Structure formats: C-alpha cells, structure tokens
Amino acid sequence: MSLVFDRVSYHYPGSSQGLHDVSFEVGDGELVAVIGPSGSGKSTLLKLVAGLETGHSGRIALGGHDMAGTPVHRRGIGMVFQSYALFPHLSVQDNVAYGLALRGQPAAQRRARARELLEVVGLADYAQRAIAQLSGGQQQRVALARALAIDPRALLLDEPLSALDASVRGHLRDQIRALQRRFGATTLLVTHDQEEALAMADRVAVLKDGRLLQMATPRELYERPAQRAVAEFVGLSTLLPGRVSAPGRVDLGFAELAAPTEGRAAGQAVHLLVRPEHVLPDPAPGTPNRLEGRAGAARYLGSITRYDFEVAGAPRPFLAEGHAPAAQAIAVAPEHIRLLDD
Amino acid sequence: MVRGISLVYGLYLLLPMALLVVGSFGQSWTNTLLPSGLTGHWYADLWADPSFRKAFVSSLTVALAACAIDAVLALPLAYALYHGARRGHALASRIVSAMPVAVPAITLGFGYMIVFNTDAMPWLGSTPLLVAAHAIATLPYLTNTLLTDLRHLGLERLEQAAATLGATEWQRFTGIVMPSLRQSLLSGLVMVAALSIGEFNLSNLLAGFQNRTYPVVLLQAFYGATGFACAATVVLLLLACLAALLSSSALRKSS
Image (cartoon, rainbow over all chains, first blue to last red; front, side, top):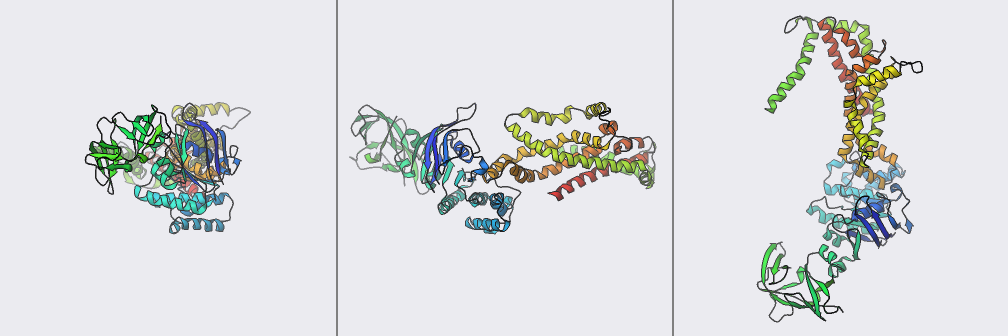
C-alpha cells in the first residue's frame, strides 16, 4: 500500500515552522527515512500521517485513499514512538495484544497473535513481565511488536532508536529493517541520525525548514547531493567556494583544480564538495590536483584516523581520513570532486 | 541540623496525640503534668453514649459518600482540565487549584444555609445536603492530586499510542488514563476521607440534630470530664484512619 504526499503544507499557529509544499511517495513495502535538523518539519510529517495533527492543505493518501477525514483510531497505522509509549499498567503480552482487543478479537486468538509477535522480536520469554522490568531496547521491541500486531496499513517510526545506547542501536536497527521487510510494511522512518537513515532506508528524504530538499537512494544522496544543504547534512565533507575558470577547471582562489564542470559556464560561482575518504595522502609529485600543506588536528577512531589538512590560503582545512595523516601533500582525483551550484 | 529540626517538629506533632491517648486512660487530670490513676471507663462511657455512636456512623457515612462522589467527578474533571490546560485554557485549571485555599468552607456553609432553608428547597439538615457540601469542599484536593499526576506521567504520549492502535477517546480514557491514575486516585481519596472526617465548619452549620458528625458532637465533650474528651478525640483519630483505609481498599477491590 503506497503512501503519497501531494503538495502538503502545514502551519503551526503563531510560528513559521511547519511544512511547505512537500510532495513524495513511499512505495508499497518501501522504507523511506525522513531526515533533517530539528525544526525541519519531519515529526510534523509523521503526525499528519498518523492523524495526531490535522489541518494540513494538500493531500496525504494511503492506498489511493485521502486520509484527511479519517480520525486517528480508524487509520490502522502502526506507530513506534521515541519514548516507546508502552502502557505501564499492562504486561508485555497485553501491550502487544492491546490493538487486537480493541478490534474485538477473542482472548485466545489475540494471545496467540501476541505470542507470535513476541517470538518474532525475540521476547517470547518476557510475555508476562511488567514493562518496567525491561531494558530500553527490549521495550522498543515490544513497541514494534505492538505496532505490527494490528497488521498496520503503514508503519511510522518516530526516532525509534535515539533513546537507546549505541551498543543496542546497531543491532536493533538491523532487526527493525529485517522485520519491516518480512512484513512488507510501507514504512516512514523519522530520524535526526543520518547514519541510521542511510543504513536502514530504501530511499531518504531530506527536509529543511519544512521543505523537501532531495529524495534519493542513500548512495545517490551521499555521492550526488543535489544542493549544499544536503551535502552538509548527509555525511562528512569539505565544502569550498569557487568559480568555474574554464571547462573542467575550478578556481578556488588559493589553487585551481581539475573537476567535472558538467557544462557550467566560465565565471559561474560553485561550491566544491570533497568527501574525506577521497582525499589521497602524500601523492607522487605530478599527480593531478596535488595540494601541499600540513596536517592539523587528528582524531584517532580505531579503524581510521580522521584529520584536518591545512593548505595555505584555503578558507578552511580539508577533512581527510586514512591510516595516518598525510605528511606534506594531498590530492583529490577529479572524478571524486562534485560541484554544487550556489 | 536537619535531624534536630525533624526531631523537634516530630515531638511537636506527636506529643499532643500521645497526651490525648494517655489522658483517655487517666482516672483524673486536673492541674498536673500527667493524669493520675488508670481506667478504661471513659471509653465505656463513650460507647454507652448514643449521640456519639450515632455521630460515629454519620461521619463515616458522609466521608465514604463524599469519597464516592469525588471519585466519579474528579477523574473526568482533572482529565478535561489537563487537556484544556494543554490547549491554553490554564485559567480554569488555576481556579480549581486555588479554590480550596481562597474560599473558606464557612462561605460555602452560609451560602447553603440561605439557599436550602427555603420552601422550595427545604433540605437544610438533611444527610444528602451534608454529603454534597463535603464532596464539594474536598473535590479540589482530589482534582489537584490527579492533575499533578496527569502532568507528571505524560499521559498524552500513551493516549496517542492507544489512538494509533484503534482506541476511541472513551476507550483511551477508560483503558489507559483511568488505570494509570489508580495510585493517585487512591492517595487522593485517603486525603478526602481524612478531610471530611475532620471537617467542622460546614458540618456544624449544615447538619441536623439526627445526622451531626463526630467533630460537632465532640465539641460538647470538652465541656465535661477531660478523660472523656480525650477518649472521644482518640476515637476521631481512629475514625479518620478507618475512613481512609476503607475508601482506599474499596477502590483497590473495584479496579
């Protein structure tokens, strides 16, 4: 069942925050992550789908049906909250069966279904426990089982992992993704963690100030960001202002580099984007785009060291990574440079 | 320092009660630090006095009835105030919070005396009116307790979760809100029971001869023997504890 946003706008009364003309589609069984800085409108988007906020303009349709007039409790949408929102007065099993009880399923049947889902999330032995006896990661798995139990027409995940320890997060991330695939649930994931979005989603939508900046696969988003704001938000990078000096050449003021200018006219202002993994340490003399300088601050991260490399005259250092910082020069292959229009 | 203050305060609080208990078993107590002689006959006298027995039952009835009415009224009231306050209608919730402090019970009592002493509504002195007055005077205390807990628990999130799972507004209230508030309802009702048992001003103005509450009758005991007065007061203390116990256990059973 596909979820369609068609020119959706929403304004919080007395505030400039909200959504402006957002359009995109989540395909049947697809997981789309919505990322953006806080205040970008990503949570609003989720609340509108769930029906927890109302009064938008434009159209939000699930399975071709506009949901504007449908109240929250009739939408049949499973939602997982950042704070888990489990019912503290019910056991684990009764939490999972809650939605089924509301649908009037007989006790034996809903108990069986709750068991089945707890089995799926690996918590079958915890069915009779009180919620307070579970760890954060376990609670979030119960919340997921509870949302899936009602056979939702779509699944909404609101920062599902951000309240958890890093050690639990990675594992649970894979588990959520596997379950989402298994149930074929059309899913919208809201997160401020871009790494989480890239790792889990089929496609990622980047929101800023209530506008959709780009919607693409994680790879395309990282490798071919459509604009500066996207490049700044997704992944680490060095962004430097410059000007096209000739076809295939960009003048940065302190150096001129070879780069794919892709038909841009000479004199056009651009930003040059370089990802840290594409910075070559100490290239042989004569390598294209070789820049001399010296290494600055270094952060040892275990498998790699991330460091700044300062080039005389550059407005900011290049961010690079490798086994060890470059000693006296770096280079970036022209095909690894990406130009972004201002 | 803190321990010292607590100790002095504790003594200040408990000493009168301890003296009451001691006095209630004393044969005679006039112009001495402690009473002389040991006896149980003040309690026997109290038991034999029909007006005290009647007042005992009357107080317990009024307190439990007030608890029942408050429980039915306060839950929806607190819930409505909680949601209203979130939408910016904080004034209503502030009025309810401030009411018991700002309006003395005696004001309510005089109002009732005027309104219910008419030919159209000649109910002054009736038990239902007494119960209603107690319920209204104690309601804000219970509502406040519930309101504080509603804010503290962050029930909004749980209600949203329940709504996405298919719960109507009524199902959210009965299935999520009410069970979550059980503990604070319990402690709030204990407070209501204790307040109602100890309430004097309203009862003195509104009660008829047949349904005088315990504190009203108790006042007369102080015109007689000290030992009798002490014994009667100790019983009031026990009565307050009993009402609190009954109201909370009744609720525990019903949920």
